[in-house]
Length: 123
Image 1 (cartoon, one colour):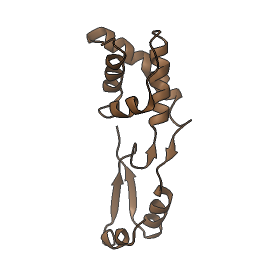
Image 2 (spheres, rainbow, N blue to C red):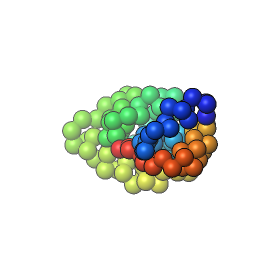
Image 3 (cartoon, helix red, strand yellow):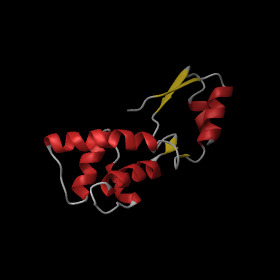
Image 4 (cartoon, one colour):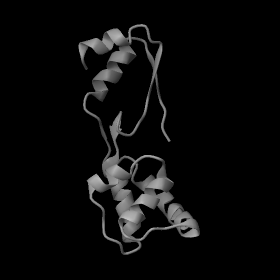
């Protein structure tokens, strides 16, 4: 944590964080879920960098982007079905490969010890 950060938040009573990419790196778990979904359709796995570029906008958008990247775009009811199949897969891959972003533990400890309330806002 840089020294200026403490000064910047000194008068703050609370701070909100996004989860993915801010507090944690969940991309490896998301990739595992996406690749399990694709494997169920006999489609090749995607690389981590490909999946990282697809993150944002929720699971449905992720599923849509993954199938498009695999050369099998889905629309309408086919996308709805793939999204239904993805839900339990995604739940199985929530934290197995997820790690804290560098410096997060120290930053959260600093805010906690400073009496600043913290919350997470994510989809």
